[in-house]
Length: 271
Image (cartoon, rainbow, N blue to C red; front, side, top):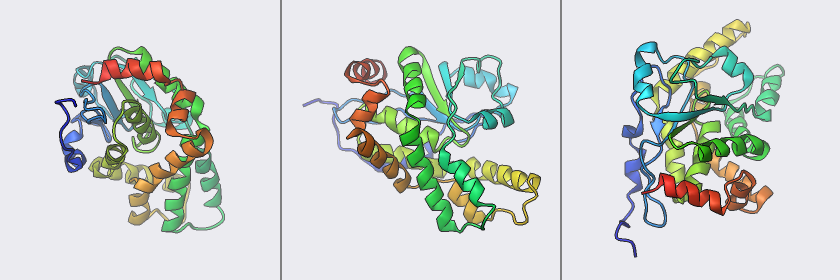
């Protein structure tokens, strides 16, 4: 038995000290440091996740550069990326755009024209979005996996809030590295501790509602739902993988993370 194995206290992984202090960032954190089921640990300082990078000021570019990120995978839609562009100067010039826009998002927006949704409607919407991400965007996550395999520097994936498209991607990476599924859920739920996330989404949603001439503005309950994650969202995504691929491992193979690829990543990213 490995001498590195020790009892797991999952509570410490819920603490806010996992966030990376970077001015203007949203939900920016290192998702390394977790123990794996074979007694190793994911290295810190090599795997990062966050929301939009738009508001990072030039004064913080040097701080971002110190993270030594070799590739930034931007999972936002074309419209999101145009509305909130990422800086194109170094150290952000390593950005690759892998657009994902869940089908449920478009369907839900259309339904807003017919009736005012309830809080439970918004929760169901978020569940469907996460299922869509897992089910309908295999090619996008295959491209993400290719970039993860190709870089020998740190890796960053992000979307607008850094919690749904990014949350699923980070969960898949941690699964590839052999992290216990309960800890994967813990990492997913840390987004709920990102105080700046709710505020940024509130500002953005109110601006959009006003620009569209909405008769009523989104209330705090709705904003709370859309700015947070729930365990059942990621559970639903995993259920989609079991339904369509027989197992999470089957999905990993479909996106190019087969046995040899997993071994390569574990050699590079585990201690």
